[in-house]
Length: 320
Ligand code: F6P
Image 1 (tube, helix red, strand yellow):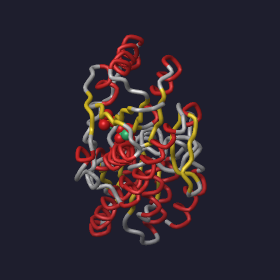
Image 2 (cartoon, protein in one colour):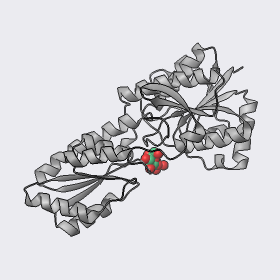
Image 3 (cartoon, protein in one colour):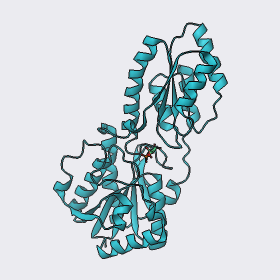
Image 4 (tube, helix red, strand yellow):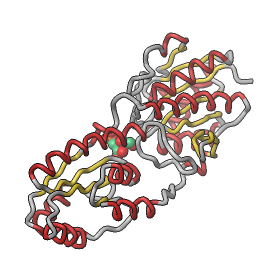
């Protein structure tokens, strides 16, 4: 029977992680569990940086971005020695199961750990990259999209006033989802994503054609995994002679107050993660699918996600 669980956040922070921690802690306590917080992700487990959390430990965090538990990218946990040490810490502290809040790298690590040591673990997907297979949205994605969108709206003011081309680079690692959603909602003219080949000559041809018809400004969104905004902007400038600027949004997209959607998702997934562990489920990720909360095996969740990007891409182009 599960009596004590531990919760940790790993990988890149995402807005809504704190809401998920709050739900795991408070719902866990409600279900008569002891909940430990592990600080700095897998690194904290290896180095025994953990403590018991109570109801008040998670007060006042629901509206905060980042993670009160801190996070880290930990190479040591990929080693035999690191995993062995983490397992010893789990046994020493009588931890029966883990709730891992993070992205695909975190779940890969959790899955390996389960296979080697049989430690029960449920994953809560929190990352601005929407790259967890089998579920629709990660916690933090909605906030990141809104943050990037607000930046694009600002950039549009300058683009139209100075009649310029802007190339805006957004995060997402190997996933073009943020770029697509932002390009669509921002009314952008073009989007370059890793999942789709692009032809810069064609893009420049469209820009020049549009310019001849009297179109005066462009915003092109580039996903970081596809190309560098600086390089694309420089080439567009050379090929069209139009004044072109590059903007890299970078980590601005990762922080900030979580939106209502990110919080709501985080709170619901936190509750379900605890329920899953109490039912004896393990080695799974919980997430949203067709408006329902489901659980997906880690092995499936870490496969390459099919985002069905063509429809979205087509719509960006038709509406531009
Ligand atoms: O995984 C989230 C993410 O923000 C990616 O979109 C990005 O490629 C990466 O993290 C950046 O990582 P770091 O903050 O370690 O530079």
